[in-house]
Picture 1 (cartoon, one colour):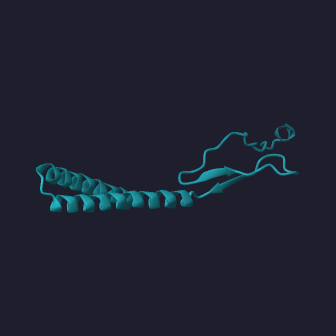
Picture 2 (cartoon, one colour):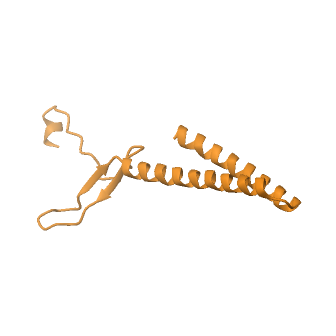
Picture 3 (spheres, one colour):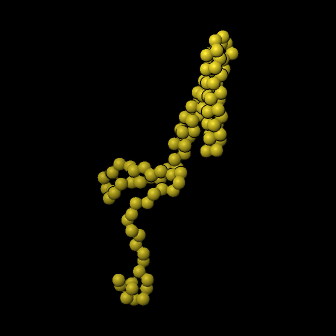
Length: 108
């Protein structure tokens, strides 16, 4: 008020509101410690989470690759019509899923 009376602009006081972190970042709250008025907040990049999900996705993809190989082997060794059909179909579907997961991992 005093600044406005003297012809100066009053400094803007930021409102205390919750802000969301930028994309790719996460906010971690620390424990309250003696002598601090509030909680500590740290902004982390979230790279550890991305790496974890990328490794997990790669593991899932490799599981489908192994399943496709096993089904193709079963299809090759089969004598019965049902085993030929099931092995070939499972090999084809799991190969397509592995291909799709590979493209998803390459893009993200």
